[in-house]
Length: 417
View 1 (cartoon, one colour):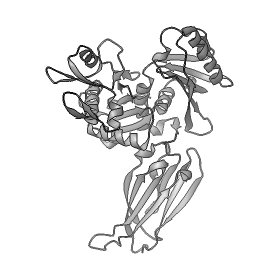
View 2 (spheres, rainbow, N blue to C red):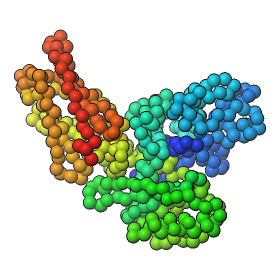
View 3 (spheres, rainbow, N blue to C red):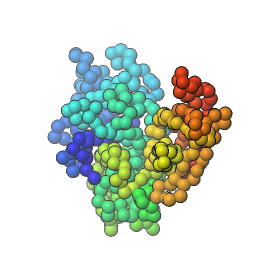
View 4 (cartoon, rainbow, N blue to C red):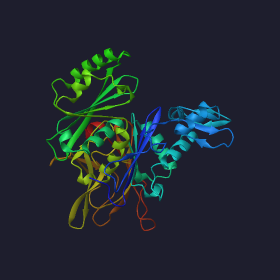
């Protein structure tokens, strides 16, 4: 799957210390990660901003670091963390950290935007270390401020970016388990991806574990990592392995590298998550063509549909689709209800022919074939992966006023796992 003629995807890896940004569009065979210095691979952009003392110009990346070291600018670091906690930053004056973070993202985005600007972007995907209701809301607000519309924004975690990157490669690379090792100076994290083969589309899941810290001595480091590999790879058939992060640089892997490469393809790099974010945007845009669907703690586990009749035909209107992010399901519907005052929700697992039906009764509503009711339904994502449905009788304006009756139903986490 490659981008169509008018498609343009941006993937932003957002970590505590730095961001990376890639774009993927027609004419490219894979996403391209943008460097802040032409001709180099300076992909990691610190979450920092520097203000020139002489001109007041805001600078970032390598230029901002150089100015700060030379004493020619006011420097603010750790902006993502400080913005999330609503901190104030003191430079030549007082600034809100969130405002400075916006300036940083606006400048970084220019590296990847098409000539027609943010409006021409198909999907801008933010890859976070962890997705929570609070972090999703924070990034959503930032993305809207950057000029993106709701349908352009996608928020996910690094595990999902790993998944999207892997399933966008040749199928033989993810025929069995796929493993990723990450070392950024705080220890080794392992992510394991498996795509089931009992359903169509195939259901993919990723797990994560912290394996421990590595010694500084290179020989001991190699031996320690080798022992970690043995535990992870034991009794598993692994098609491909990925090593990412600065911790694997320096040429210290001798015996451990041999273990990684034994009987499988192995890859090493730094920008897998940002490229994976681009792939994820394309997978979402073309989800009907996707061979896999990814499930995790913030995903909707079942298709949730409203049974609808139009004339003599019956069809199902999607309330929430399996594989979509829970924080993205908010919407408002208008419903013309005839007959019994009941709405039917159908819950169905991907690849299954069986459905579970929930009847949402609307007590007090007077609806019939002759006198239909006009309703609104708000679909509201809540904490703990719950979905709240708010139904209200709207009536027909001056022709027939609504009763003002309201009903609430909660689709709990247990009902769509």
